[in-house]
Structure formats: C-alpha cells, structure tokens
Amino acid sequence: MEMTAIADIPVLLADGSTSGLASIVQQFLEQQLVDSESRRRRAGRLRGRLGLTATDYRASVTVDFLGSQIAVCDGSVEPLDASIAGPYRSLTELLQGRSNPLIEHLRGRLKVKSRLRNPFLPLRVLRLMKLARDGAR
Image (spheres, one colour):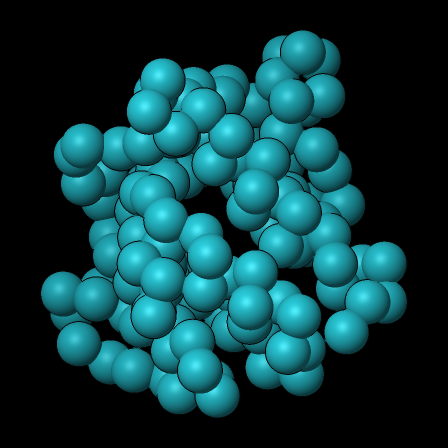
C-alpha cells in the first residue's frame, strides 16, 4: 500500500493500484485535504465506499472513506454504498467540484446510484470537493 500522509487523513493507493484513474482520484482528494483543516474534518466524518467508473475508458476505482483514512483502489470492490459512472471528463469535473452528481445524473451525463443505508454519500463527497472551489479553508 502506497501512502501519502496529509496531516490527519492520509490518502492511500491501496492494493498495489497503478491505474491512471486511481492516481488521479488519489491526487484530487489529496489536493482537497492538504491545506484545509475544515476539509480534513469533513473527510474524517465520511464513511462509505464509492465506486467511480469512466465508461469511455472502461476503468473503475473504489474510494473507501474510512474516517481515519481514505483508500483508493483499482476496480469496483463490492459492496458499494454508491456508484457514479460516466465519461472520464464528467468524472474529473465532479472531482474538481465543478459539477453536481444529481444534476449531471438528471442531464444523463452521469449515472448515480446509492444504497438505502448511505443514500447521501455522493452529495457528501461533492460537498467535500466543492469547498476548495468556493475558497473555503
């Protein structure tokens, strides 16, 4: 497991993950947490497993929000609490806090699914990512 420490919430590339998508997701999350205590606190409260699939590249990653750390691994690791699938560009815009998963789902650009036990996970992840765009620290 490769680890990049970020204050209180490390972001890991788990299980020897080497895909470009896993690296990009890990880097985006790391950038969101590095200079913001409020984002680290928010990330520390997130619990759940989110699958992200770039449908145009047939690549998937799983992001585990575990409270004390975030782990990113290649592939779709069941059980997922939520999943987001769509073109690579739409996923990166989501990760950059430039789009809303529900609006993109309604527009047909992303397919968003959540389990009943954690129905708001995609929105909570969006809120974590949007903080950087809004300039909040």
